[in-house]
Amino acid sequence: MTSSFVVHTIPGSPAARAVMAALVEKGASFRVAALTPGAHKVEPHLSRHPFAKMPVLEHGGFSLYETQAILRYLERVLPAPHLIPESPTEAARMDQIMGISDWYLFPGVSGVIGFHRIVAPRLMGLVPDEAAIAAAMPRAHVVFGELSRLLGTKAYLASSQLTLADLMVAPHMDFLAQTPEWAELSRDRRNLREWLGRMNDRNGMRATTWEAVAQLALTG
Ligand SMILES: N[C@@H](CCC(=O)N[C@@H](CS)C(=O)NCC(=O)O)C(=O)O
Image (cartoon, rainbow, N blue to C red; front, top):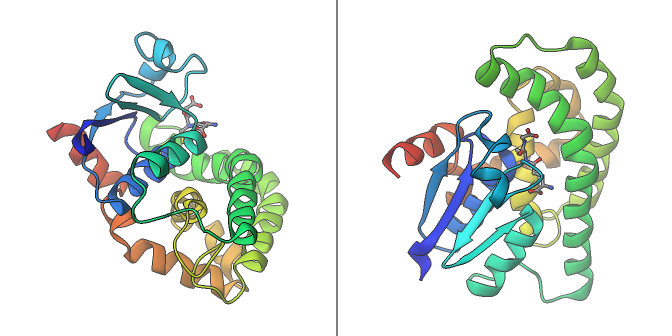
C-alpha cells in the first residue's frame, strides 16, 4: 500500500516537493514519474491534470491534483505522524497559512522571484526578468512579514509540531533562500530563517532537494 504512491512532476517543483516531503515525513515510499519541461502541457499529462500543472499523485487507481488536496488525502491514508493539529485554533492557523501559500506566497512571490532567479535560468536558459523581480518585492515583504508574525516564537508555523502548512511553505522559502533577494527579505526575520533551518534539517526536506528528486526520477 505505502509503496504505491506515484508523484508526477518535473524535478524542482516546490508544490511537488511539499507532497514528497509529506510522504517522507510519514515514512511512505514513493516513485517519481518525471515529466520533462513542457510535457505537463500535452498528453498524457493533460488527462491527469487538465490545468497543465504539477504535481499529480496516483495511489492505487486514484489520481489527484491540487497540492492541498493531496496533502490532506495523505493525512487520511497515512495518519501517522499526524500533520494536522488536534487543536481547532492551531488547525485553523494551518489552514490559513496554506491559503497564504496558495494565494500570496506562490503566485506573487515564489512564482515570480523563484521562477525568474532559479527555474527559468535552469530549465529554460532564460535571463532573470529584473523588473518583474523588483515589482514582486513589496508583496514579498508583506508575505514574509505575515509568516514571521504568525510563526512568532513557535518551532513551526501553526503549532509547536510540524504541520502540513510547514511542508507547503518550506519548499518555496528554500527556493527563495537561494536568491539574492533572500538577504533583504529575511534580514529582520530571524525566526523565519531559523524555522527554514529547522525544516531543511528534517528528513522530508533533505530527501526532496532538486538534486535528490532528479536522482529519484532517474532510478524510478
Ligand atoms: N494550485 C496548484 C498549483 C500547481 C502549480 O502551479 N505547480 C507549478 C509547479 S510548482 C506548475 O505546474 N508550473 C508549471 C506551469 O505553470 O506551467 C497546486 O497547488 O497543485
